[in-house]
Image (cartoon, rainbow over all chains, first blue to last red; front, top):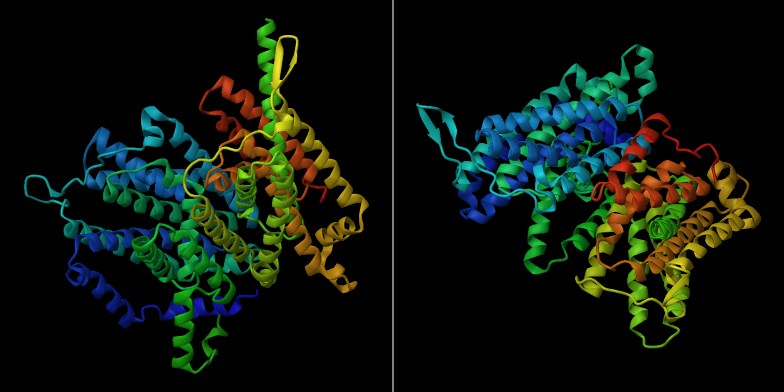
Length: 341
Length: 293
């Protein structure tokens, strides 16, 4: 429709993203980050940005790829976080078991919610996801015996990883934990990228462009949407589990609808039509918040103002804008390879 | 037994008073959805602004503070809404819906902090206007007069809204824009102005809701993002674009909350979701969804 240039750009970028130079630089920066910042506080900020990046990229499976705007994505952050906390605190303190619990519980939840949600489109889809997430919020808020109610849960462990009896690595140090998160997040983002570029991922984009036509081809649109919904939810759940152990403290606020709004914001801020755009947006949002908070507590005004300006003047997002600009430079505005898509 | 009846009557009236406030917010929200196709996340912020403005006017130690505030504050908020619509929302109508959603979310963030910046973080309480102080007593039963005032104002505004939509020229334009805004544009009507008017009307209604609610609730930043969820639910139940549906939905939610609290203290909201999820799933257009305005 109106943002065709953005969408064309996406398909162009899908082929280009292994723009290996850019990704290598990014990865090198991520690996070297703890040495570059040399400061526990900033290592923690970087860890949080990594987790938020995974969360935003998981949401972009719905928004950017399938064209479904979910206003309830915080439900996976929250449920993943609670699943991790409940398992590691009450059952067995294992990092892997906790993360698997976080991902699996969110996969199940997404499956259940998705069955209902994917039949709706547009605003109705947004509203149903919002309603579902608020149900979960209400349960977490009031079910004191299990979730601790509005006090949340404290003392979530960072279990050490390794092979029992052979060796183990403690994750208590900020740097160790950062690398652990980096490995998990990179692996999951790579997996997401593989899925996005598989034939399955192409079908999702086709659904975003024109669901009727995909239906006519004979593909089960609802089922594809459901798969996208489950993938997004599961990846979000892993992010929730990581967040849980990262913070060591969780509260129902993680599930509140404004949190969902923030994830949408990250996605759009960076650019929903570029694969790594949402990660870039997550980094930007957390960095801006952190910087503003050093001066004053009113970070929402700044972020809200940026969002308003962005929507009005840079609808492709920041990374989207730069990529468009870069590709225009490199190919001189030639749209030649778009005709295929 | 006598005591029991008056208890349930009190709950019923409380539910009704809350429902009227909800109706004022949801009616604007639903008309915006029906006419502009915009899910205005900042609508709760207008409600919050109304409440804070009446707090400021309550500081003036003049008995007429409530009436001055009641008259002026909604106009201020409506003016604010006009600016938002004309300068920020209007350029976005041609684009994907997502962008209007994001824009209004941006304003939610801005307004929340703006209120913090101006009025501070602590809870505010607004006194009940002098005219409505005290309780109405009939036999053993007594009830605050102010709540009765709200219960009376709700239907009055409902009738007022009905009158605007059905009996005035502006209302005719609104209904026409909801049905086919392109056609209206082709007929030479300035559709942009109609949209701005609708947005301002919605902001006016929401801030009025905030003003009326202020003396019976605590006024605090964040009250906007809370009320918006309940208002959405009302809109969903009633059907987008139907203000009659908004009224029915608001009364339903008000009652469910008032009586649900008696059955399951903390889980009153669960009853509401138990009602709304099946409606969204089975009948996404709501109970009154067919009748566009």
